Image (cartoon, rainbow, N blue to C red; front, side, top):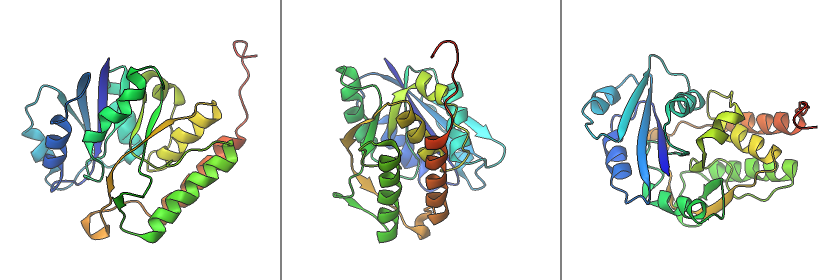
Length: 235
């Protein structure tokens, strides 16, 4: 199996070199590729990426910022692996946890795996950030009669073909809710494994806001009430 690690990047000049170093230093149990999408960065991110010479790394550039969802779509369209996982470049997530996400797939226990931050062993920059995350996750559980622990986690591992079939339209952070809503609507329950997490604050470049939480709730409601298209193949 080959794993495509998809890294959306926007104005991460100070962190991208460390993010690359950490991601490539992991002892993965399978072949990997690291697909980086520079989403219209206006700082020195492109120059740092231009100095990368690891054969496992491919860099794609958006001429202007289009949002995380759009960057992931570009990366998925280019992915050559059978499986994919998203890894942000902000150093909040530890790529050393990725093999733990792969374990349930490699031993046949799961197809879709989420990294659950649990917010038990962590550093989170805001009470309201944690409560907002828990509120959105609870909304998904109520709407879809599921029991997942962390909807907004960056670490979502699944087959590339499955992600492509979801036809994710959200261009920004709403893609997290759309991915989960569409999986739950298909009765696909992610397998969750605990991961570490270190949140950064606004001064360090944290980009998600309360407006993204409101959008996530709207997307979940939309996906729950969307009419199922009946075709000859699924009657």
